[in-house]
Length: 116
Image (cartoon, rainbow, N blue to C red; front, side, top):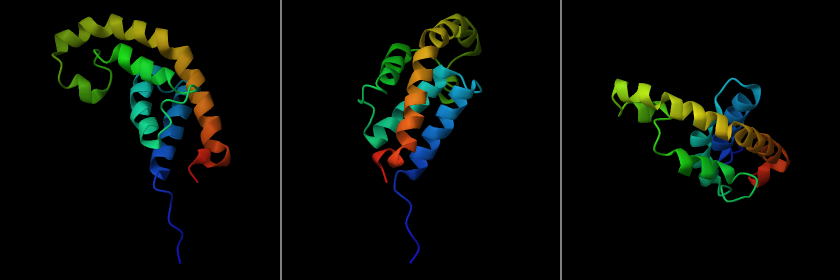
């Protein structure tokens, strides 16, 4: 009988991929935070103090066009005007998001992150 994968396995894999991208510097912290939050919510660990900074980032920057899906709803001229705000938000959150991603990778790789 084939073993079934854990129901949250895809979420865990997405978290690891995003976190690795942030830790390697290949993916900006601000959009990563906005993509990580729903995944952490799905796994029920968003309120863990090690990861809750991401909810702060999401809350403090929800008015900005961060993800591509959000940008589709903005006029091009408005997007240009938001670039300085996006740049400031990225600088503000980067170190904290990197710290969270490091903790997240450790958590998910140790004993299956409690999801196995």
